[in-house]
Length: 211
Image (cartoon, rainbow, N blue to C red; front, side):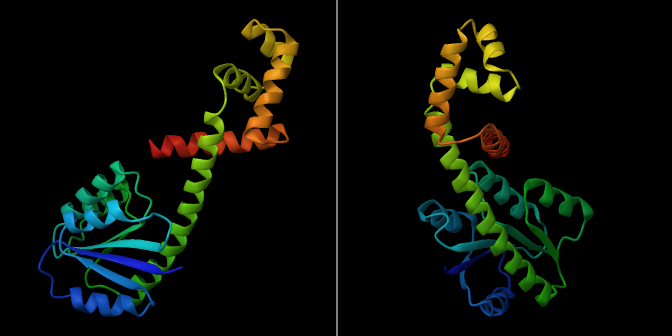
């Protein structure tokens, strides 16, 4: 799988050529962008998960433009790791960057080996994020196939209710609850309650994080 590094430089930075040369040592395709719009044009047209990717936002001074772009990408449910290189070494900027979702925040003078190690780590992180995202989409599709009544029965089961208890609370017969439970297991392609708990917990946690 091809590795792509997106290098975004908001300011006229003489280090851009040097950075590209350094990053190319990772056998990665380094794409450069001079502004947010140029990168977003690529972002909207690309197929997520087709490559290992990371984003490096390079600014001479203030980290504000970098953080603003991260927030913009967050609205798009971005999962590509974002590394900020900035001349702003203040604790506040660093804290704001991580709070916004930055993968790493580096300040000048830049340690080249540290940068290369972090980029390599970001590729591994991205692969993990892609796998989790695909699992989430698959589970979202599965849970979306359940009828409202099947969802009610599922929630009762997940709360620890027996079929009899669920039947009483839903004003149904135990037999009807068992039928809904069987249909639910079939639609979700699960074989046991522990599997249901594991998949549902993953789905809800990821859904909460994504939204």
